[in-house]
Length: 317
Image (cartoon, rainbow, N blue to C red; front, side):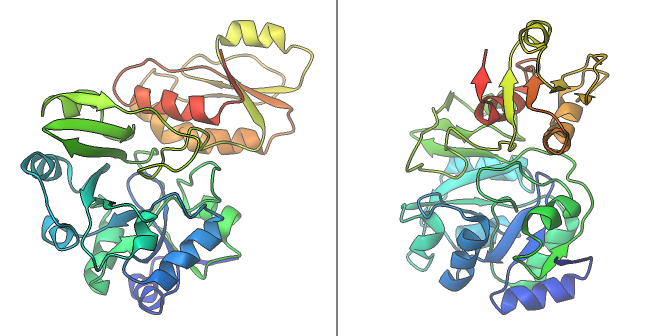
């Protein structure tokens, strides 16, 4: 398994040698490599078993560094960056020629953000190059929110995991592009739609089965190995009473012979977001046949939670 530690200098040295390091962010743990080195980028795709048509997100330390990677930085995009960076917002911007095509899957735009985690920001300042860092998990599986999660999934494929504690948001970044002063949301995430609407018109784009134009756009994603069905839990429990099931609820605690997890007993959608992937991972390890879940209130980051549940589910009712 990988070595887990807090040595930024060790992570820096490995990255400078085109090795991969798992890093903490406020959203989920990322599998990081030099974003300007095709060899390192190829290692990311291989370690994750990620299809080459699915582009990666690049992480930088400041807006100046981001500007050096892109041709144009529209005024509205700059306003969003100034408001939400460092933080869980990824901008799609036209890349410069020196940015490798393999990073963007041949697309003209690159996905870029500044993570809001002191350890990763310190690392980025030490290495002086941007980091490509998709979630540190096998492609399509539940994203990791702790160093231990990364080790369980990719520990045999990478040398080092930088341990920055549990991710405090627990969901991936919101990904947006700007076209004619309209904000297009390619993936729901840590920045609420309501927050974006204070800057102008917002449109949420549909997902795709193949060839996405941004990271995280495939319609089947973030899934446990066990089947998960989302709907009215009372009805689902009756329908599947003859099966060994686990329960993933929003706030209500269900008496149940097998595992039952309430994401937020107090009904807080942000707490639910923080616990979602960890709860799915726990249920995935239980001796059950099926996971039964329910949607959370469709407000704020709850939209992003429901998005992940829908894309992870076998059936959504």
